[in-house]
Amino acid sequence: MNKVEKNSKNVCGDHLPRNIDFEGYIRPDGSVGVRNHVLVIPTVVCSAHVAEKISCSVNGSTCIVHQHGCAQAGEDLERTFKILSGFGKNPNVASVLIVALGCEAISCEKLADEISKSGKPVETLIIQEEKGLKEVIEKGINIVRKLVEEASHLKREKVDLSGLIVAVECGGSDWTSGLASNPAVGYAMDLIVDNGGRIVFSETTEIIGGERILAKRCINDKVREKLLKIVSRVIERARCEGIDLIGTNPAPGNIKGGLSTIEEKSLGAILKSGSKTIIDVLEYGEEIPSKSGCYFMDTPGQDVESICGMVAGGAQLVVFTTGLGTPTGNPIVPVIKVTGNLDTFKKMPDIIDIYLEIIEEKETIEEAGRRIFGKILEVASGVKTCSEINGNKEFAIFRTGYTY
Image (tube, rainbow, N blue to C red; front, top):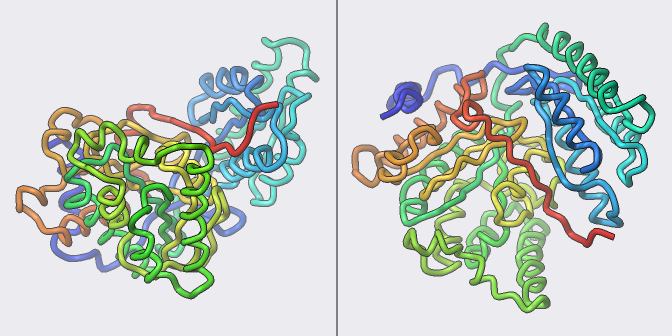
């Protein structure tokens, strides 16, 4: 059992803490960050290298590297803007430097204006308006150093769970996922909602076969219809393209791990969302409402794209179940890895934050769920996850169109 696991096991014991809160950074718009990043955002693939060079030169900053922002149109361009601005507005970000080329489809000024609505400092740097690559990188480094210095003066304050949005994800699922890690995480998500927090789950392709079960949890007919509509939309899109979803879900690794059908995978996957009422169904990257409860977001089953949609919507922390193991992280949010597979934990202890002993019958689902809940409070208050320690910063946007 690794050090992270030992620390997390004694947080709650058999009972919940008397004071269920965490220490976070209160932002100008009233949202609460569990991290205090200075974020460097390239508007376009052409400025990504410069943005990354700037960020790598300044401790305390992070960068999102992507391949988009130019030769896009319509809904596809709007989605890229939504995700980039959503990352900038996320409560885990203290301030932002936007690095633009100067001739791309994504407007640097509009992106800065949108992020500025959150009340945080936003600076811009346009490569084509400077005097050479060396000079623009040096200028960017000086800007980020100033922002990091300003952010360093911000202090954590005690807040209740109404300020926390937890995203849940599963990747590299196997036979233990539906029996151990997903139901235990679902129990922890119910505790988050019971104590005033918000949770969001996603992966539309991975609720196919279980959508009728989720529909019964929807708060009203309108939300129920939205849920069933997005599932039908995904199935129809695949059908029109002549694609059999069975070819991608379950994935080859899932099948090797003991999952035989998309329905079997879905019935296990939906357990991670808990049992609470689904308040609303959101489009990809849509801002998560302020009302406490459970939300579903329409995303693909691809882990990185799915997580990025929920983070753009405002989630500050991710709980990620895995049976086969994956090091996936995120540039601005901590990702807690949970497994119920002992072999996976033994092979990859440096990427797993919590190993659950449910299969061995050494703890119940409820006991494991309380332990996960305790770990969430720890991480929200500043304890680093394995993905953060390892430097995993995967970022990807779910695109809807062609590059022109």
